[in-house]
Length: 136
Image 1 (cartoon, rainbow, N blue to C red):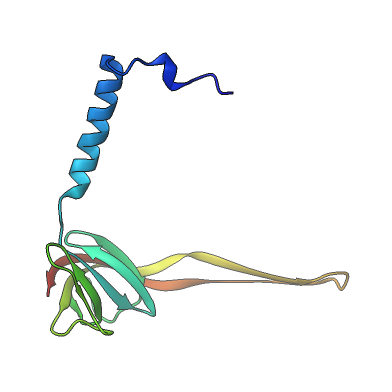
Image 2 (spheres, helix red, strand yellow; image 1 turned 60 degrees about the vertical axis):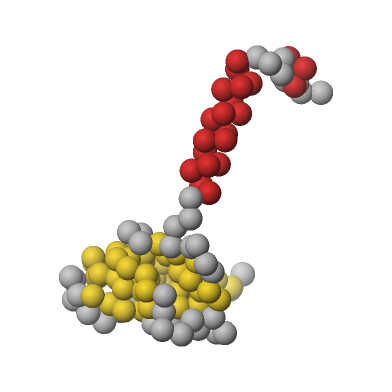
């Protein structure tokens, strides 16, 4: 049996009331509908909203260029549009914030009892986008 039970808090106590009001406020904040989209780039799918920063596989372009992602699988918000497989005429516009390399990935291979070990690594090129607008 745990040291804490619901019997220790009376249902009309101010502590319990403030706890539930705090939970309700957090829940009410999450209920607000924002426009979001699910896009596909670099073989992966990402859920994005306006103002989000997104780290994706390398895209061509310089820092400050505008990129339009046309492979939109779903647009949500007040009304949800699900594509089959893509939503027609829906695009996500983003701005390139940074071009660079990701953290180093180490690949270690060994064969037991053979004194054979290999350690290789590489840094994957990546692009960081700031999502500016969702059209759809």
